Structures are given as C-alpha cells and as structure tokens.
Length: 258
Image 1 (tube, rainbow, N blue to C red):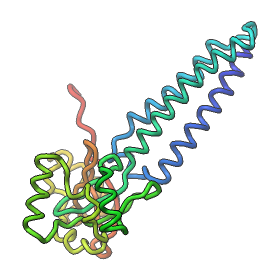
Image 2 (image 1 turned 135 degrees about the horizontal axis):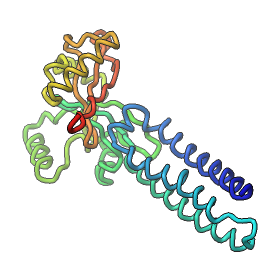
Image 3 (image 1 turned 180 degrees about the vertical axis):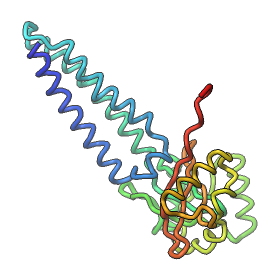
Image 4 (image 1 turned 90 degrees about the horizontal axis):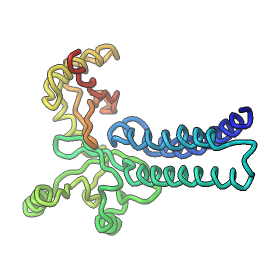
C-alpha cells in the first residue's frame, strides 16, 4: 500500500503543478475578474481539474503495484499520462480560443469580445486599417469604444449584417477607438441599478444591497450592465474619474421549493 500511495502522491503533485502552471498563466494574462466569469469557462476548468488532478492520480493509485513488472507498470502509467495530456491540451486550446481580448462599449451596451469571435479576415483588415487596435497572439484584454460609422449607408449595412449573419460591429476591430473617447457617451447612459431592466426586481434589490455594503450609492446613475457568454453582471463606475469601481454578478436564482 505504501508503494501505491507514494506513486499516487508523486502523480498528484506533478499533475497539479502542470495544471496550476497552465491555469495560472491564462488567469494572470487574460482571465482575471471579470474575464473568467463573463466567458463562462468554469465548466472547462472543472473538466480539466477532474481529469488531470482527480482521475489521473486515482487511476495510478489503482494500477500501481510493487508486484507488477516495471515495463507493464510504465505502460499503464504512460497510458494514463497520455489521456491526461490530451485533456490538458484540449482544455488549454479551448481556453486560449475563448480568451477575452476586448471589453467594449458600443451605443448603450458593455460587452465582452473573445478571441474566437474575431474572424481572420476581420483581423487582417484591422491590421491594415486600424493597426493600433488589431489583435495579436500576445494581446491582452483592453477596454475600447466602438462607435457606429457616421456614414448612414455603412451603419445600415452593419445593422443588417448583425441581424442576418450575427456579425456585429464589436467583432470588427477596424472600428475600434480609444476607450477615453467614448467616456462622454458612456456617462450619458449610466443609470441607477434600480433602472436596469435586464435584471429582475429581485436581482436589482440584491445588487443595490451589495453596493450599499461596499459603500457605493445605488441611487446614483453610476451603473451599467455588461454581457458575456450567456452571463451578465453589473459594472459600477466612479462618476468623478469614470474608472470602474466594481463588477457585481447577480445573485443565483432561488432554489425550487426553497
């Protein structure tokens, strides 16, 4: 049993270290709050942890035996490590493709733009027409303003494209502009949390209470909602500097029968 436990501990340590290195690098670079929440990657990370930190070492605990020939033991552990590596590589690729690259303000909405939402042709066009905002493989998340073009014909074309093809202006970096340039328009659309209809009455009350706990005034027009991949949260701004103060997710729905 001591042999099995030693093999389990060694495998667990190596697996946990490899996963922590990958997730730590991705979190530090791209998925810091609110990135991980808005992109909805919790389920991907859960699978990676389940396979690489739980299942792999447990299988080693089962197959490791001092009476087993070394070649057979090496083969069994090699198969386990291969499965772990495939899971780690797949999860890492998924997180890389889904990493947040831009937090955008366009019209009246704050939205998240993930790397997977940017078509290669749009990236190439941005590199030619708006190189300062074109994404690169090493680009970190940045806040940008995305105004609609002044030309009515182009605006109509973009709106038609968004409806028919799902290609929105926030997925076209050639239209991106400095975040500071959009602050006057952002200030104009900020509202008290109680007026943000995207949240339910229960959610607005809970968010207002949370703001009060943090020393923020829920009656001031200092908030706007932000959307991500099937998620949304409240963004509260400092009205003096227009810097983000806090990101608050709505409370989970009540349990049925509770």
